[in-house]
Length: 275
Image 1 (tube, rainbow, N blue to C red):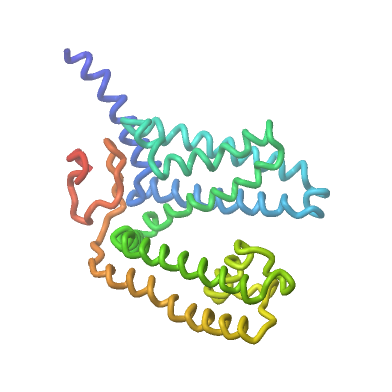
Image 2 (image 1 turned 90 degrees about the vertical axis):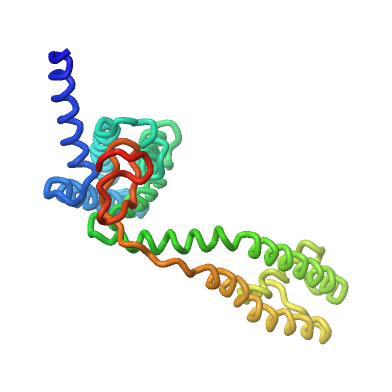
């Protein structure tokens, strides 16, 4: 029994040490590892961007190709290390950061079968979200979650608002089709609805415009209505922004891999494991 425990302890200590390096950013080794990964991400994004420029690709295409594969291999090794560092690899792999880490390396491998997909590697920029934890800016993540929760809480009101907007643009589009007709570019009700959406949102592409006096009058009303409508969803969401942000730590649970624990937390608030 004791021999079995001795065999398990080195493995557990090794995993804990690896977890401390690749997931924690409060230790020196973890901070160095995270900052190194961030610089590698930035350099790989630079390589992908430069490769999309024809002149640079023609002169340095082969060097950029090998450089991108170098970064991909490094990120693949990092991804495997992250899976090895957690007790439940599948939970991490299916989590947000796990999926982002996987998507950050897949395009290069897929490009072997589908040329051009390597440019999708720009998704690697999402990995920079870790910088909030690394630089102890967890309160920014908390603020982002407040906005997200406010949007979720407002979903019914916003849904009613969007349905109302769809009804308005449909009525306005159909009316404009009747007023202007095909001879003035409003060739169908869907085309007129498109014009109504562009006008109501104050985008104004200018590819369609009314020619008759009545049409211009209706367009003016829709433009003014557009400015008034913009304030509605803003007010709905603002009304939900009442929760206060809490100070969070950069600790990551080694058991369930949950983030955003309180600064003074000793145990995970999701699975009760010791942090």
